[in-house]
Length: 603
Image 1 (cartoon, rainbow, N blue to C red):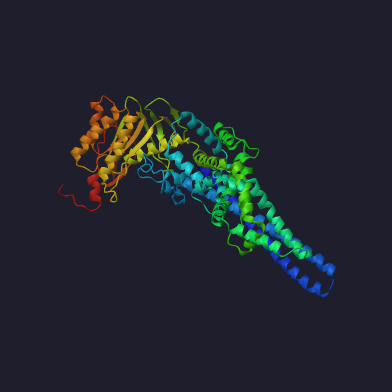
Image 2: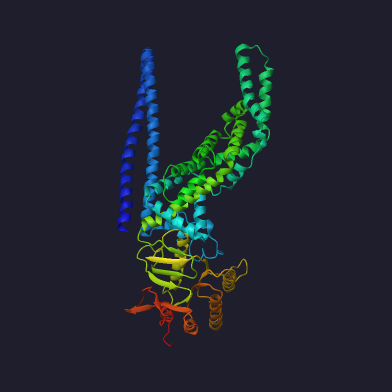
């Protein structure tokens, strides 16, 4: 861990020194530029008065070229400084991730939170202090959306998971490549949360602007108009009505269907900066050689049969977006009329759509997957001692050694657990705050990582491909008039229905039926656990109901008991969070009640 942190710290120091040098160079150029400007003004005044025109012209031209050169160098160094600043920021974030200070990262994935999801809400996949917040390095919406999909929709294909593992392993060793990928994405000035309007625009053609006759008129008419104006002012041999009539006709054309043209042109202009970033990210991917099949398959998908690469196609669109000027500029208004500029752009955009429009969605989806894989690869790079899970097609297997919670990055408590077909359901007992709920989440979140292709926080892990269902967090919903108990019943009903459709269900139930009396809770929990077992499901149940531990003996080992416990020292309570076999033998509720000031002397 220290060696990885040291790598990041060295990069931060290197970039800090580089930024200091760049700042000094920029200040020198600023001073030189000011000096050149002063010299130019002095030469203009004195040399012009002395009427030494040849010296004045030569000095003026030299100073102008020198000033322009300094401006170009300044802009180049400014861009380099901005890029280096981003790389420094990225490495600082990596240090925060390792040291456990990542909960202040801005990207939390709140837009992907869903309280009704099968497991993501209970397992802290999205939101504050979530798996998404910890892992995400994607900067585009497509990247964030793809990562969210991978984490919330576990892959059920062993071959795909294994290929992802290979790709993530390869990317984990390309730290500079991943950091540059993120830096390119961070250059997006205004993040667009959706690309759907761009995708729809790209596939909806307008036959009017692809009509050869229309194109011919749009291309030739401005030439005739400009020529007639020049011919009139230079020779005065033609009537003023000809250029005037042509201009009036072009004014009419300009205002014809203007709202529709503006809508389409403004849409492309809106994505101008994003398209530029998409192009850079894909270029960064295209020019890199990979060994893994998964990454090379993504490269093949970028080729849509065109002679131009995806990068070159997006470069063409980028240039067209650049040509769409500010629609509200008064200077543009006259240019638009004389050159029919809106129409020229519409024709060029339509031509681009006809050639490449159907591919842009595919390109951006691939871009999103690249960013998502890069995010997952960070885990293997930062935690090289974590295990790559073994995915088996055999049913009802979950075996892990030294399994810990990945989001508890500093000294996590790790435990062994073995769930197999003969004993598919584990009952976890223990006192309050002993670690039961955290352990359930530990298993669930590591399963999510396993199916994403990432390493898991364990020395060893082998698991079947299962559908994950949880019932851990339920609360009242006043808007829908649903109590927390009824909400829990709905979640459990969902799990039962899922077990009827598939026997590869992995459930995590935390303190089930806690919203009712102890007798009903015990009977309901006992019947539910047996039904889930009979339906072929596997999973874990945490409970304070110690009597449920009798199920192990009653079922001849079909259910297994494990527990967490606390211990007391110097009149204080401590937890070791170590998983032990058997039913819990300790309780701490009365002790905790006493700690908050409630007197229990008579009890």
